[in-house]
Length: 164
Picture 1 (spheres, helix red, strand yellow):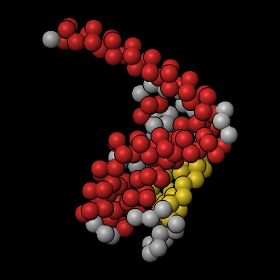
Picture 2: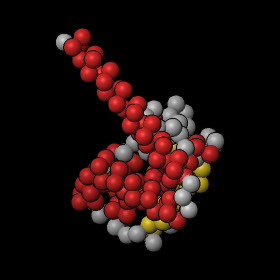
Picture 3: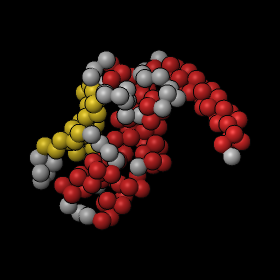
Picture 4: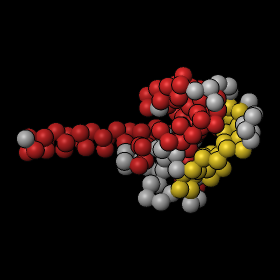
């Protein structure tokens, strides 16, 4: 059985490599756009990624509890955030998310699995992913800032969420 899947795995790896090259090319072109367009475009891709990969979990947490501290605790556990620090209680002033670089160069699975290269343009996509998830979790608009990233050569990525 294992021998029969080898050609399929080889084909899938090849296609993934081609897709990664395609995405890297697009990211290079996006990086050249004006800041407003680049941020808007990548926020939308991050929101799409949230809808596909994490939003069901966030919506379930919101449905199960109204307690914000409990929501944040569950989100940290269920989405495997290494570090999450909350400033303020009622109201929450800010939430800091940190991802130590360690063996993962980036929080983005496309980078983690070697599909695309680590680059600063993807940080805007991650910012959009965080924004989408926390707007649902906190049930209000949020602003997300990028404070540090491995793509800029920092030892970790740090994003800060500010409720509106």
